Amino acid sequence: MPTDKNRATAAAILPLVGGPDNITSVAHCMTRLRIALRDRSLVRHEELKALPAVLGVVEDDTYQIVLGPGTVARVTPEFEALVAEARTQAAPAPATAPAAAPEPAAAPHPGVTAAELADRGTALKDARKARNATPFKLFLRRVANIFVPLIPALIGCGIIAGLNGMLTNLGWLPALVPALAAISSGFMSLIAVFVGHNTAKEFGGTPVLGGAVAAIIVFPGVAKIDAFGQHLSPGQGGVLGALAAALLAVQVEKWCRKRVPEALDVLVTPTLTVLVSGLVTLFGLMFLAGSVSTAIGTSATWLLSTGGAFAGLVLGGLFLPLVMLGLHQALIPIHTTLIEQTGYTVLLPILAMAGAGQVGAAIAVYFRLPRNRSLRTTIKSALPAGFLGVGEPLIYGISLPLGRPFVTACVGGAAGGAFVGLFNQLGVGFGSTAIGPSGWALFPLLDGRAGMGATVAVYAGGLAVGYLTGFAATYFFGFTRQMRPELPPHPPPAAGTPAAGPAKQPVPA
Figure 1 (spheres, rainbow, N blue to C red):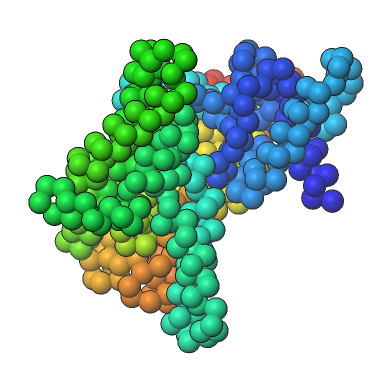
Figure 2 (tube, rainbow, N blue to C red):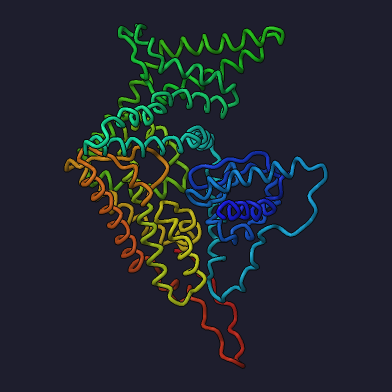
């Protein structure tokens, strides 16, 4: 049964991350199981990556195991249950064999294998992590942690909104349309509260106080308040205002905790936190955040309506490097702001073209190395996830360690982005009603002003352009003269013939 399969996967992962005593927290996002660990030296990385269900690992502030969309949502509760069961036992678990022990690794091929490329990918991730440990990038990572838990609700409500729009356009089931509109819009109307709650939790405050301050933004009664010579509007400032209000609430709360006597803390601290932060929000933050939100929406619309193909080329071509630098996390509040304003984010379909370029590049590597069974096996196992927008296995396992294929993948992303950007300039503007998925998984979330037929056609065309350009650029320009003869493993020696010595290791371009 599927549950047994998911539980077996969880049972196989648990001992490889140091067991239940090494785990401090468990969560998941769209594709990754995120585990906070006490001691990372206890993790058996290579055995973990060898598990069939594991598409890759990412070492960040949490240890992240890439399982793919759908799978991660089923494995995580099984993993949490196993951790809880182990902790409730009075005695330590006996040293029995794991439920699903990984198969022993195959003997390495001479030449460069998938395992060696994975080691290079791990080294590159470690180097990136060291470079990313700046205050600004750490702040962006924490901002991303605020919005990641909201993604499942955004996706669910986004798909329902798309279904409701289709029923409205077709004139079907008119009695059901208002109900679907309420279901899809309820979460978005209160998203500021969830952002405030998560912000306070992430930055060390009391979550409910962050949510209480952010709730002021969406309260209908703010329309009676005059600030800066004009009446406020419910929702003005949106998620940016909620983020700023909750950050302020955390600072006020911490200030109070240090100065208010313990006997009065339970009364004074919450009151002052909500009062001070609420007044600043009403008479400052809502106006400022509203201006910034409007500027973001206007700028994105102007950029694609005037820049068109060039804007799409730049956005699609630079997204993979932004991911490598950790700067893509700054886009999450922007996506959410655009969804609040227009119902969809016009940026995500263009940025998704980077994944199409990556898939095309991986397919080219597959055909370029017909004798390297190790790399070809890795590519075949990672491609299905790549088509659904999960690019980490291909990035860290293939293109980035090889060097040039990462650059040519960016070229494919730029071409796909230019295609989508051009049609946006021509009037076929569209976007995604939620953030998170990309690749083929983005189709159910597409929405636009030109109709669903044109929207789907342009997005599919962009993916095709990204695939083909990434493939062609990698096939013809993705390998140096040294890489081509050195990457394929040597053929097996004939019987009685001594095996060749170890192959010279290529240097990535």
